[in-house]
Image (tube, rainbow, N blue to C red):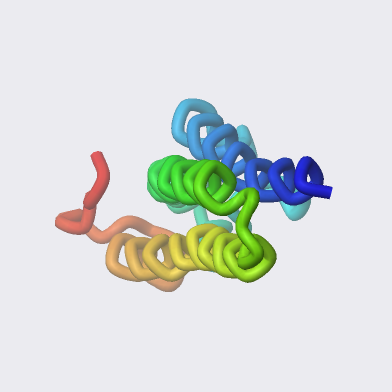
Length: 130
């Protein structure tokens, strides 16, 4: 049963790291409804689509690495503890937050960078993660 918990703690951070790298290096070629960072703001223009993937990818890479470290620490330190299920639940909650919180930062960046039609503002001072 421990192996199940260990694997489930590792899957999400690895997923975040892989997609973080992938979306930074090569975002989906075109806007679609099946794959990618798909929100109304990101799908308004190809520029917004690419910038959202680059920014979100960087945030997910950082979050994924931190989540992986947290998961590895939880597994290494608490695997024989009576409190492992509590620690496991806390670690899963932390991973959920690490996966969802970057959405808010990305949407805020898109709101500052693009108008309601998806056109970039003339002086893009919000290029946070060049």
